[in-house]
Length: 287
Image (tube, rainbow, N blue to C red):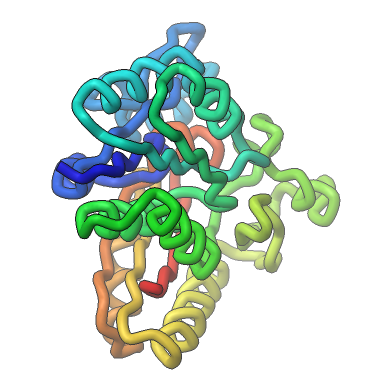
């Protein structure tokens, strides 16, 4: 057992197999459908269930984990014999999850380092996996935290949404709203910068948007491969597996780079804000 336990939240979009192999503790966020709150864990609410609810026009909101949920997890890890905890979460600009974890630090006597990854999805997930690998190799908490922060900062994220409506409803477009204004009929390409979702380009058709997303992914992967030996890529989607699979294959064929190219459906909580049909690319060099 590693001396340092690594905790993250469900929006990191890691698979169950990845989480188990890395010995991670995953704290679920909540998806609220027509007033009924469900944990984003196991099969309580899956991305498929979420996509269907959105298509049917049901009322969908999300909420952070409670400080008590974090405290319970931290206490359990301390009782298991861990000497420190590193808890890594999606951007605090997008969720109160970081704050909830921070409030729970005093629940245990062992030190807890809470990290704002300033990003989301597998840009956070890849950083967490690197942190878990460092912890498994015996690194102290400060080194594990440094590994996480550096890899999260190195990631590049682009994504396409079929409509900005879901982001607008959830108040997640921020600066994007100021730029795009009322032009909600465009096919936007967005990025994540300094913890916030920001507009990157506006494209008039879905076909052009997806072609441009591919070009942006190829360029980001080529840049990263030019300076790093290993670069991992995640192609995210919400109920758009065929398009994600095709995009992943094209990225593999166009840029030669050592690293994993995975297809990962976004978590249900993230899916509630990007909507069905969303596609994203995360390029994450290993530091």
